Every structure is written in C-alpha cells, then in structure tokens.
Amino acid sequence: MKIEMGQTKPENFKEHWPGQYEVFHHFEYACGIPSILFAITTRKENGKPNVCFSGWSSFSGDGNGFYTIIPGMLHHTHTYRNILRNGEFVINFIGKDYFDSCIKTINDNSDDADEISAGGFTEEQASSIDCPRLKEAFLSLECKLEKNIPMSDISSIFIGKVVHIAADENYADGIDGKYEDTGFMLNIHSPKDLKTGEGKSSAVAVCKIVRINEE
Ligand SMILES: Cc1cc2nc3c(=O)[nH]c(=O)nc-3n(C[C@H](O)[C@H](O)[C@H](O)COP(=O)(O)O)c2cc1C
Image (cartoon, rainbow, N blue to C red):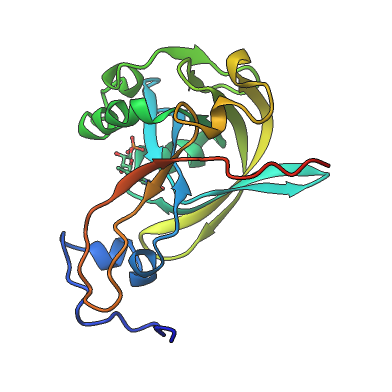
C-alpha cells in the first residue's frame, strides 16, 4: 500500500516553530530526502566575510558547463543580498566535524560579524573571483550567478555556473575519503512519520560506499 499525499498539509503535521510551513513545504518533511550540506562564502557590503550554512542544492550540467541549482535561497539572508550585489559566491564542502562551526556562523550573523572567524574557520582568497573561501573545505566551487528565479516573497532559486574548483590534495583520489566519515556531510531534515505526523528531529549523515562498478 502507498501513502498518497497532495498539496494540502496533513492536519497531524504540527508546526514546531513559527512560520515553519511558510519556509518549508510539508513535502520537505514528508519526503525526507537527504541533501549535501555546504557553506556558501561571500563578502558583505562592508567587506566582512560571510558564511551561510546551506543544503538543498544540486550539482550537474552538460559538457558546456557545470552548474549549481540552489532552491530556497532565502531573501532575508546576507548571502542573497551579497550574491545579487556582485554575482559571485563560493560553495565550500566541509566534513561533519564542522557542523557546530557552521551553527556558530548562524548565531553570530550581524552585519559587522566576520562570520568566517565567528565559525573558527580560516579565510582564503578564492582563485578566480573576488570572494573569500574556507581553508578547511576539502572542495570549493567558485561560482558566478547565471540566473535568479524568484519563487515567492521569501525565496528564489539561484543558478550558478562553476568557474573554478579547488580540492584538498588529500581528497583528490577518486573514490576516497570524500565518501567516508571525513567527507561530504548530508542533512536529514526532520523526516516525519507519515501516519502519525510525529517527528521533528534532524540528523547528519555521511556517505557509505556499498558497491563499486568497474567499467
Ligand atoms: C542544516 C541547515 C541548513 C540550512 N540550509 C539553508 C539553505 O539551503 N538556504 C538558506 O537560505 N538558508 C539555510 N540555512 C539557514 C542559514 O544558514 C541561516 O539563515 C544563515 O544565518 C544565513 O546566513 P547569512 O545571513 O549570513 O547569509 C540552513 C541552516 C541549517 C542549520
């Protein structure tokens, strides 16, 4: 038997924080699809480095270009304003041990804050664009904004073209530590029990290789 669900939020999906179902659709919690977590670095109007802990993106394209599609780019963030102002940003992939550092950048989010220092990260200058990036990242994607697609009053979809990458040499061996405990961290965002509507805990996951397909 399949549990079917449409556009109307089930009544037993309780709100756990004010505005929860304005920021996220109930399908977010019903589907529970894991997404890669990363930190977007940009520069604020006053020159201070900015960090935005983020998920909910995808990365691909065709032979002409590699793109990041970022849905849910919230308009109230520095990141939204910074990217609209100069059209550039860096996506930094960091391991799960930096989760709390990322939360520190959310808690210290004033206009005057150097959010890279606030998180205990080390600033590095991006190679191809005028943005800071994280020294601690095992992979950084330097991106230029290609499209801003407004979706509502509160968020947009950004599409960025990756123009340069920087990879830690210790994470440059193909199927390696990127797909283990030390690699990509994933967000499991409060998946719900679809029958009872219960469930508000989020979780962090890492990849586990279960099969290698030799060509
Ligand atoms: C696990 C996690 C994932 C997040 N993902 C996003 C996201 O994809 N998009 C977004 O706009 N905010 C996201 N946030 C919230 C931002 O990190 C937060 O609003 C941050 O303070 C914005 O930073 P800024 O104003 O310096 O840009 C996420 C927060 C957490 C804890």
